[in-house]
Image (cartoon, rainbow, N blue to C red; front, side, top):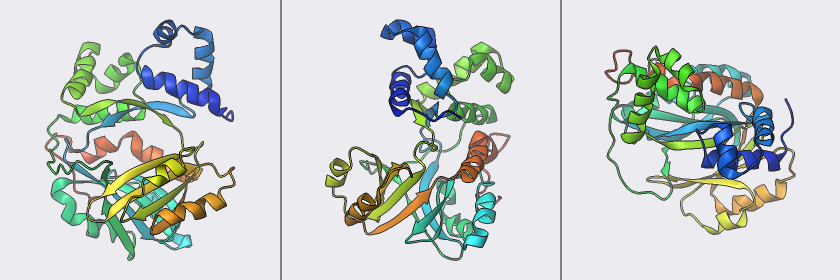
Length: 305
């Protein structure tokens, strides 16, 4: 795989953020740029370091989002990660070391199954902590929907989440529908605000390390202080805030990590290793299909996996 040039990758990401689903020819015409230059960049990076995915309104579909940190011994790390990534309600699993040594995970739980989370996590570790995570800033809205679509829409969400630029002919084939029906289904997801939009996603091969910090009080100075790095903020209702900072292991950031720790009470470092990425990707490709019952009546139990 070609090592990415960040300027080229960021340029392509910026273009696809503006035109997530349009053809390369239409993008080139709209932006007044050379089509063949754009196609060379696209062929070089798309599907390798960059894809376009859809933003799903999980709240409307009755899913709550959580982060969890589990103590797992080194000799059981891979085995436990394999078991966890077989559960479609788990979204990502990565090795992590800090206030917990073992695994850092994100997962979803149906609103009516949140009382089963302890039982689910205890299958993997006797020592864990978890927090519900909401978008920043926090709206305070606590109204959750439910799964109300047919099973075909679970397949469609998996396709759009994995690669929203999948040709409509291929989407229709995988759904077993006509192209007009496939377009109708996509438009319905957009009109009902289940899909909120589309965004380019840079692969973790570029950012292969992450620092997670938990804090009860958010000092927004940290966002300005580290603005040259990619930082995301989440709200942990009932606790405080989560800060996640992504970077490359090629950078010498030891002093920055120490400085970052001044803004949080708990800190750990995540490792986005290739073997874990493969497991996470396998899970991601069809997770909605495995979460949703085939009769469309709702979700499976988070304890079934």
